[in-house]
Length: 319
Length: 318
Image 1: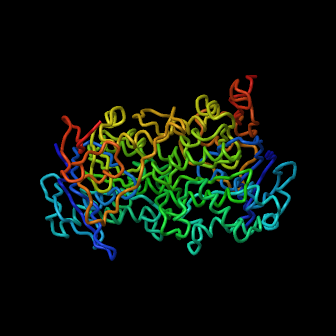
Image 2: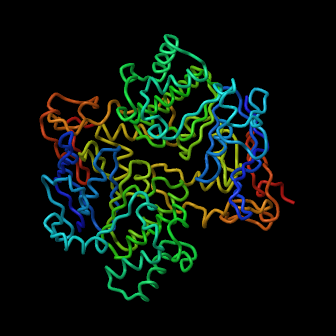
Image 3: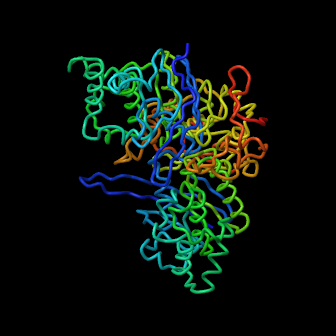
């Protein structure tokens, strides 16, 4: 059953230098118990998509089209109060830098208890006990003692576990993780990913996992959506995307990431850079200027929704 | 070219507490070689690179560079030493390390003025030459850092480092702030410059896939000590130290991973560590009583020459 259904979502930002067309008809869907990776370079719109779902976009942002369905509700039509009710309960988010996202002058146990009091209506005693239980759930050793620690007393990996515990406090059905392991060491990163995977499967949550690291996404996610310059270009199972990418951009991303067995000479950098999203004459396919397979009509014909069952492919001349 | 022996760095924290950032680090680097230094945050890899680049002073030990112990020259004095131009650095984030008030050309010219005394036409010619070497288009030279993309700033950082014709380049996570497609371009540039200019690299990174790609040998550090050192293929394909095995298992491969063995618990504190305890023992699944009685010496990690690891498990049984 579909948990999250982002349908042709378009977002613009008004800036002094012009209107930035940050998202162009982005469609994604997610079922319960599934981890969907959203992968792209900086500026691809992956975080904007996440913030749009949480309705935490900057005031300069304007949603110019599309809808966001969450179970039976249409998130863009909800009043702010109902939205606030959903955030922290059904919808939860894990942010990129846990140390800045946590309150530095409150112990982690108190921060967890605050969420439990606000969202689950627990009394002080029960909230404190549940906070310790949540810390244990994210495998923080010695949770009773750690509950009274301030964020600065904990390592980066521990802080990220606290963030995950905070997200889980409301028993969410959708977990959005925005680059949750950036800045963490590889062994810690692997442990945090294993934790997210275990919890998502156990609680049958849906998880939107945002990362710039295709290899990481392929390890963790069931399906991966590749974004480029505000457009979703390809969505497929992680295995398919790696073994047989069909969009020229996906193929380049796969070929450019260093991994076991690759050589310096074998890396194939992607030519050019992201187009200026403020340009009035953005082509229909925003990958056009970087693409080796571009056809004359790629500039004007809207992106197709091609591909077989379960494989979204938005390209006029795929591999 | 470079011989590091018994290098240690301690920071006094007050109240009798001492942070041991580096202890007894020793290794050699051959001319033209690229040595990767990997390890988790706090393992001492940046401190080590700063000491070798002579930006920080060691507490003990020596760094022989071309037969002179440069660790004996205080960092402040080394700034005016003729050897300063022979060792240059490429920093982690070009956005933070470039002076925002300097154009690209000024940034590249600065070390040439200070270390080489170049002025006028000779200076301009060398700046243009370095820009060309790093693939930086001439029209970008008059731009300020905020007018350049991440990849262009990385090129300015590299052009500036190679400008005074160094022989040793210390690279501290040069690609960690870049997108994969830009990272690939910068890695190819670094590989090309190394061959073309005959440079020696000390490459600090937490990205093991990148280190494997660029380096001949790799040194794995854990809490200020060498855990394992050897040819990159030997270390990554046949890791001998339990910590290296955990690191190798944690490298993203792009395939779904199940049941990988990750170290449990937290690293021990680098403050006043017990010198007779292996620093990985608290997280090691194979720790034995001996690991808490004596710090393990570097022992052969495999049949490959020069492959060493500091682990009691490698000791001949008995």
